[in-house]
Image (tube, rainbow, N blue to C red; front, top):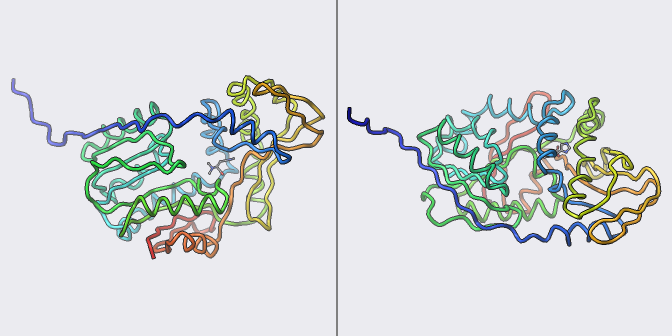
Amino acid sequence: MTAQPQLHAPTFDYIDSGPPPDNSVAELMAGLSGPRKRVSPKYFYDERGSELFEQITEQPEYYPTRTERSILRQHCGDIARRLGRRQLLLEPGAGSCEKVRLLLDSLQPAAYVPMDISGEFLCQSAQRLTEEYPWLPVTALRADFTRMPALPRALPPAPRCLFYPGSTLGNFTPAEARRFLCHAARLTGPGGQLLLGIDLHKDHDVLHAAYNDAAGVTAAFNLNLLNHLNRLLDGEFDPGAFRHVAGYHRGRRRIEMYLESRHAQHVRCGGRTVQFRRGERILTEYSCKYTRHSFSRLARQAGLAITGHWQDDAGLFAVFALAGC
Ligand code: AVI
């Protein structure tokens, strides 16, 4: 029997841009030593934290994930018409490469470049995607996008579009978000475009409930950060000695999430002792919410303009297309 030629040979590449320099101990201890203690939200995502985040997205109060999915599902044709087909599609923080599946059939990208800091997980998800979409060339890139990596040279010479769903941009301060957008605009180059999912400013109670779900999953996600710190810092944080606090700051239009010390305590970590007063807080996350107007202002500051806008009927969440202006 002769072998049948493969009509669509999947092309898959994995490029490891090298481990990011590990300065986590110094970064964490600096954050815990100042007068206003803070830890970057990237430390939420150890294995347990990633599982808990998946569970958050399934909570009835947490509307962003399901709303964004339904916007992408409903408007993928229009989004493709606006962006154009046969783009080189880049996705920082792609992880499981799940959301992009909602766009692939409509967008028909020339190639897809998912990027993530967790190389093994990325490699497995990108390989699975290649099996499901044999026509799609995939180059998975292990890189920390917040460190502004360069792209590999050997990518198809197609116009570039950067996909950044999930309102992850909201976890940056406005200054960080501007820097991220500027870097994204540089990577996509002249004629490049961005497609971003952004959580919108809304009724305070809806926002409050989304970060204080009744099942306590967001609280567990926040408190699990202390277990992660214990491993990274050889520390002795007792999650039971802290409580989850999340509230919406109307003036700053952002959820602020904290871990609050239930009583005065000393905690050994990173070879030092960190003191907490009763009620003292560690800032663990901002989740900024935008209006169409405030997002357009942020985009303009990064030299970008909104070229497309899709949202759900209740105005909870929006997907924006951006291009250089
Ligand atoms: C990942 N990020 C967009 C989530 C958010 O809504 O800001 C993280 C999260 N924190 C608590 N719940 C969800």
